[in-house]
Length: 302
Image (cartoon, rainbow, N blue to C red; front, side, top):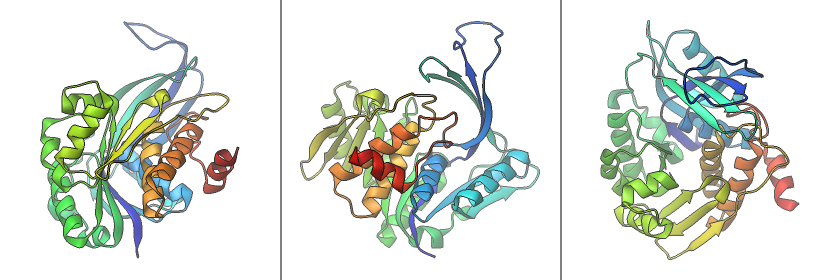
């Protein structure tokens, strides 16, 4: 089977509550809605792609517990190939508790990684990577990431890196020479480059290896830069009511890669990704409102 995009990262199960206020100190409050849903940055990007009609697969190490079964069943329901998931008997999977403020969708997240071992280089399905157009990573399962990136480059597969918000790690510098596309949150790019200036931070990232750099800025939109000299701002699209911003950035990543895999120009990919990210804020949970291709096309035509 051929894949448009293959992801390597950590899959989680999110328990999400809507609340009136985010905790600043010890407190008890009654939640509104509560949902359980699959999560994880790379995993949600793969589900985004699948919802849009792309062929995707996920590489990860999960436990044999309830949460691991939930992760696999959600991927299967969305059409994400699970042949690259390694299940560790007797171990537990990653999960997170997410409080979402009703007023504006702002979040507070508590994460428990479980005790399933990291995916090792030996557990990486090289055949799945070689059958893909793009490999998407975010630095989790670090040794497996490095190995997978090398496999991808040897096979002529593009490598995409997600520089997530508040997740900068100096060791990530060593993988960037293997990366073709880097999509980084503003604070990640700033931490990498030592400057809040978006253009300067993007320049530093481009010099590290990627030929395309996207810096995401939430409601302020995103800015896209390339080695060929392209540089532009993409506005954030609006929806009538923002319920939950969980997964909006991950949806952007998946949708941007969808565009590249389909041969879109950078500006078209950024517009498409911005629309998908906005539509994904309409419901509680990082995946509940992920749009179909028809929904995205309708928004872009308005």
